[in-house]
Amino acid sequence: MKIYKVKELKNNGKTVNNIHKIPSNVNIYEYLNNIDVVYKEVEEIKNKTSLFSHKNKITEENLKEFLLNLSLLLESGVALLDSLDDIEEEVKPEFKFFIKDLKNGLKNGESITSIMKKYKGEINPNVLSLIQIGEETGNLNNNLKKAAILIEKNQELKKKIKKVMYYPIFQIILIIGVMIFWIVGVLPEMLPMIVSEGVELPATTKFLIALTPTKIFTFLGFIISVVIIVKLLLKFSPNKKHIKYKLDKLSLKTPFIKDFINSYYEYITTDMLALSVSSGISIVSSIEMVLKDINNLVYKEKMKKVLTKIKEGETLTNSFKSEKLFSPFIIRMIKVGEESGRLENQLEFVSKKSQEKLDELSARLPKIIEPIIMFVVAGFLILMVTALMGPMYDMISKLN
Image 1 (cartoon, helix red, strand yellow):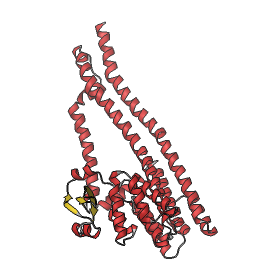
Image 2 (spheres, rainbow, N blue to C red):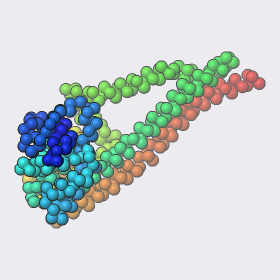
Image 3 (cartoon, rainbow, N blue to C red):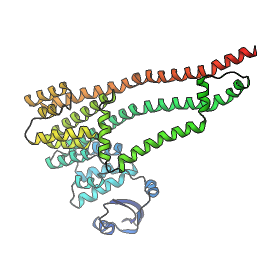
Image 4 (cartoon, rainbow, N blue to C red):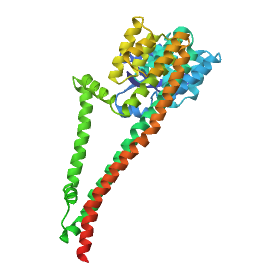
């Protein structure tokens, strides 16, 4: 994908600057001629600084708002190109280039999906799938709304995950900061006075004296280096898939983390299946869409086996049951849906229950972490008391 800054000459004689984002294999001049643009200057934007300065980006929030507005206008009977004209006047400046590309592509006979696929690195593939099905089935306005709902749910899910991740990280950084402050800032001021009085130092005090700032920062640097090396191995190692598989497998055996991961994938699977089935997408295509959102390799492997079984004619219930993917409750609900012909309703019900469970686990995290934090803080305080208070008491006794 290449981005060009084009100085265009309008019918009223005025010159305006516009940004055009096109595939790398498309000639910019042929592209401009095809969309009847009279240009004076064409400049390719190559560096990140220039690109950032124009701020042309498809954010989830902008895309969600656009899909909802387009759905409402189409539902009201407004023609597609007229709808895009109306939306273009209202959207933020950094999103106008996307509307212009849609309008130009539609005028050239392209479908909305084919135009949006040029931005597949910035748009969720499942959003593209929903829009494509909408175009193919003549139910575009309804599927645009469902695509917007999908984006909104993904946003909410990301917020939950960030909340779960950031809380323990913040607590750990806080504790490390307090420890460094005591060891680097307080101890060096107090210990010389204690030592000068000839007080015999206990083992804990000698241990803290040995923890010089250089050693502390060396240790922290070692931890950071290990994290960076693991990330690089996961990204560049020939065995990166094997390493990630082992780490994913370990995460599914770790207390609390395994519950959160299971609830997370139960939710996104049942929610996507409910959304897909209601949009007229087959179960096979729905599972393929779910696979795009699964990062855990152990889960992905099991879901691929589920997909194979369904293609072979097995029911959704038996496929999930054989791979032991979900809880008996979810399996039972899906089975009721398949047998009663109300699969969509059952999937929506299960999705809602899975979301509630995920919310509950997110709320429980602080309660789980707090005792651990208190234990660490108490241990540090005991260390400080034995290392400082004891020698100080001996020093005061000698002075008396």
